[in-house]
Length: 632
Image: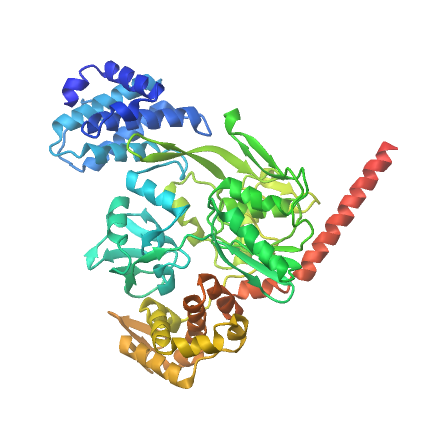
């Protein structure tokens, strides 16, 4: 079919271009002719990049990288391509325009389709598209049809699965984050875990589609994964029960004390502003006088939602963020259009290395306008804006169309010129000491990336948001808690507890969460049963083990470590009990009370918040006086 239809490469190009121009490509390109569809995807993708990418793009590089990606994916070392249209040496080939690139790609595609036995041209086309992005930034990418459905689900509704966000790095499934409230998060699966087996079979070398098809599944079904964890001495196994994955973006909102409100936002989706405003209104009714806004591990999302939330803290006409591109249509400045509803509330914003994109926009606007205190650790460093373009088979591409800048003019995007893998793993290579990390970062920051806030405080671009007040990461580790979570013991213990005592528990505590939060504790019999479950699961006390040793699924642990950490499981299970009895958001007040050292330290910084406010007011008053004097 491909020989018959594309007898003339230029005729095929003209037809596809005409269909696209008149919006008819989806009507005329049928699933039965996948070759037409594949070439249409290539045509569309290259055109979108050339017309919309933030910087000028060399069409010669796009074409050659795409052919290399396609040929590399064939994986046949005996295939002779020298002198053919698929020859990746490109001797004396220099592509100068879109039309020539399209024609030459079609010739390479046709040669492969006709000369490679059992070639999966749909898959090879996808490799060609991903190859096309090799010279571009890490966020310009191809999203296949199954992935595109998942992306849409992530920002609206819910789905069923194990609840992890992942990337494939060096052929291995790498967990970027466990989705809040999902089964993986409940078991203790965390960022940086490598999934190397699924249901006893290796998952190394899986494609994105392979991962989704193996990890997604009906609610209630179980999948067993084998995980290699950085700094862990042995393979970990988790039996994960698939479930509905909650997609609320405000994890928690409650009063930390009688005047301090707390809101935790996990990402920016289409409902985030409404969720945030509902939370603020409820906290106001409870007497909130100041706010802690927690955006740790918030990877971003919809720009407009981040801007709308930020605007509520500023008067009309305040600059919040700008986007700049080589295209005027993608360059904008976002200013507040009306006075926000929370102009005077004292504010602390929590960030860390997992805060990116939209959360960095919020933190950058707060910091540059001296509106509140930014606390925590240096953020991830994503300052690029993408736009999605749908292709003919409901796949789509993300194209970086602009860079965003904080009000002071900072671009916070970290470098990505050493490749996508190194870019993704950069946060793992930062110094574990947050202060040292910032010191090293500042020492390497050129003068061109040093800026000033509205009141003259020094801030830095080129690699995330540096907080006003640095708080160290909690580097303590509990092997007892880790064993409990990876074996689902705490979750099952709470569930069994409620199976047996639900009525009596709810009769005593169900109407008074705050009293539960302060007064509830497990009985001695409860904890004896719990430690029995830990023993049954393979926890063995060993005086001859200095810390812990894993043999298969058995953990040999020194009794002193168990004694030292004995307070941790009951506290964590109390938080899990709150989640199961009330709602997912009730997990966080109980958890934060005991485990969140960053939040605890931030509560000691309100004097610093007020000092910042006084400093800004004095600075602006002095500036106004100087302007008045010079004008006289």
